[in-house]
Length: 203
Image 1 (cartoon, rainbow, N blue to C red):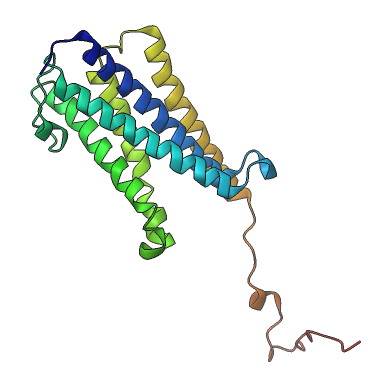
Image 2 (image 1 turned 90 degrees about the vertical axis):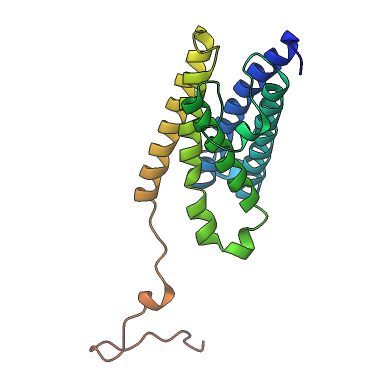
């Protein structure tokens, strides 16, 4: 253990960086569907950016937790980072951060398992991203020692506004984008007084 203030500064900074990366990852994931940049950003590129930001965010979360364990200012044990509600430091708010971190880890683990679990399950699992983001936001605001700083408050407000706007945009884009009509549905059905359309005229 150490009382070096540098460790405490690392813990605070890594927590804020982790939140910023999580926000960027959520926004990148939403870009995959809405594609606001058109063809300038390919879906494959967007996916790689989304995945990279997720891994970087999880790394920052790990650094945040390690720094908290090493510093005596908050007296957090390793088990407190794994079991929600066991931390003596603001247990309720810290528990939200633990659950957010575990959800983030679960989502990241699903990336290489996408083919095995299926695209539908993988997409449903990704809805947990909103839960992780919400829990991380409340955790940061309620337990962070820098929340009183104007720029930190601005960061939280900006993150919430950006994710809300991107989510609304995605919902509206999904309603206005026409769905492809199956080929079978495009042909008149036989037996209803209309002759079937031949696939080729033979010319």
